[in-house]
Image (cartoon, rainbow over all chains, first blue to last red; front, side, top):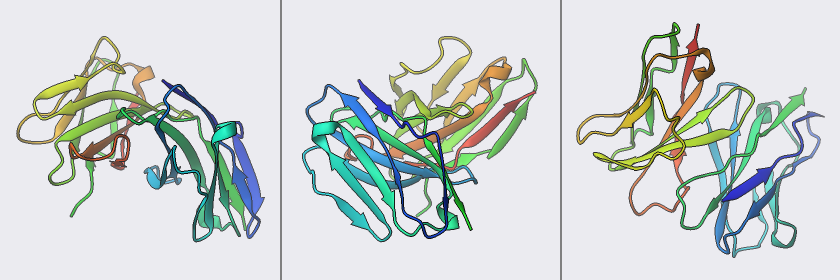
Length: 114
Length: 115
């Protein structure tokens, strides 16, 4: 079973600031996956990234980057030069390698102020 | 190639009525998963179905909730005698059997409001 903690309930930043969303997870699996999803005010869930536990390279996709630290069980998400359209709730979710279930955190609500 | 389609987007039911939520998986997908999102919470797994077969319903409430995925047609999540606590967003996802565990795309959800 997995457990995930997103300690930041709400964050507000001014447009163009950088912001990091924290995610700390617990798992007994030796192989697992980590996901981030975005839920904008319209309510749908948008897949952002899937990371394998055996690949600790950090990843960058445009203004988004992810820092995976297996030693501290963290998978933090940074948005560079934030924009108003980034305003959403962001969920971190681990999944065991042999599991079809995602375990969602409570999410971090990001508000980007123009 | 349409994604996972859920309908209705919004559903209002009075206490005691039945709610039927539909999920049409992506073309070629034979596995369906339902998740529930209570207000201010993350999503919680409810049930995993293959065509004509329930694989894992460990997240389903013991009473009033049922799910099916028939050979033809969409998957249905059925809630009988709804109560206010059933008000939530219900999300569906689908995969092929070969898809990585957990690596699935969600539908846009059905928002159920019980009045």
